[in-house]
Length: 262
Image 1 (cartoon, rainbow, N blue to C red):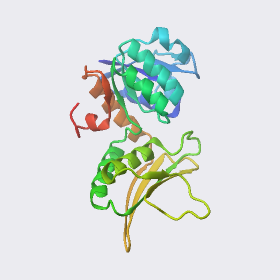
Image 2 (cartoon, one colour; image 1 turned 135 degrees about the vertical axis):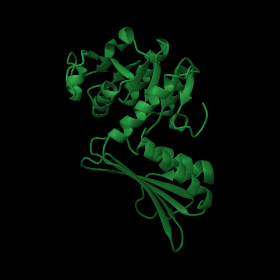
Image 3 (tube, rainbow, N blue to C red; image 1 turned 180 degrees about the horizontal axis):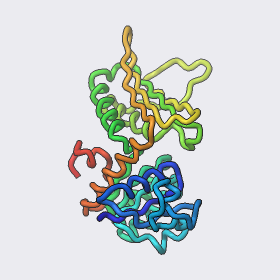
Image 4 (cartoon, one colour; image 1 turned 120 degrees about the vertical axis):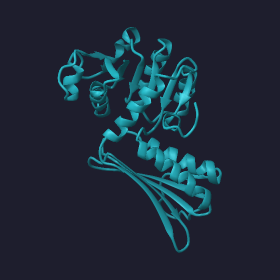
């Protein structure tokens, strides 16, 4: 059994991760951490009934973390702290938190010299295939105008989404470094750039479209998620995969899905 701890266990993704862990015969919910619902049974919070694992205050993770893998879907600042704690205690990581700054990444890269970690802005298998399609299209449509539009629920804190930013990086990796433009207003003729735009509203789980626009035609690649289960399923795959990896470092879903070797 793979013993799993969940950070942010009372959040939308955290509750779903708890549910998936509890229902998977290969996994055991070892611990749950959050700033909310402290003391309540994590299974009850997740809607799967009592599992005998109370939610522990996140501030106690430093002294109490004891698992094989820590799954973190929290916020950037808290996730950096959690990654440090896990690395110091030899606990492997699956991190789906987004919004990291370059300063955060500098710390994360140092922490992950001690433990293996799967870190991805999106754990959906479909999104990771979407990225491969964007990469393929960029090889043939590199002289087209590229625009990226993402839509998420009104409660999402960071913008643009990590998925949109990674999509832009994939395009840049193929066609060469282009300026990213995050908004247009007034007189702003289009140049050699990639537009990245965020739309927020309602309960949209996640939608990403990459436009390749030429003269006389355009191609659109779109991924739509209508349930967070798409992200949770991928995260569970990552938990099982990272549990077998001993070499410290940062991995992504390309490794988990076999697109590239660890």
